[in-house]
Length: 169
Image: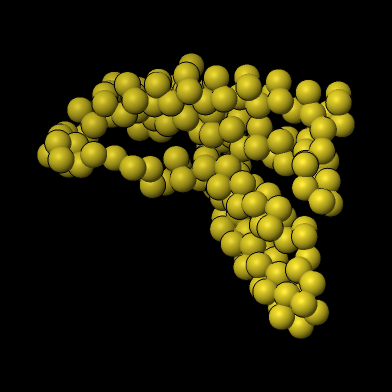
């Protein structure tokens, strides 16, 4: 069982590390789109209508696809008032409890995301903006990001349980 858990943790952590490192550079795509918006407004006096929505899509992908990497690094918000003074085992116990709540939350989000993607594909949902892009691609990315965060949360739970038991994964 420990071998399977170790393999799961390594695969999920490795994949999320790679995706997170790639998504770090997504900020440059966002900057590029917003710079084009500013330049086009000044040079051509016609604002490109698509730039704001594309910037929102890039930011959503940046945030949700990088979320699992953030969980992996422990970059989430934590109340350190008591936590900093606890032993490693006590921290793992508290982390295991909170990650269970995170897993429930992400499970609900994933259920809603899958439902939203299927609706979007079935009815060819489009954005209400002027250029009306299809919504299923960004909704699919969002759902994938939530799924990867869920897998990473399970990985963190496995690591916390191993720490509680005095093992290292």
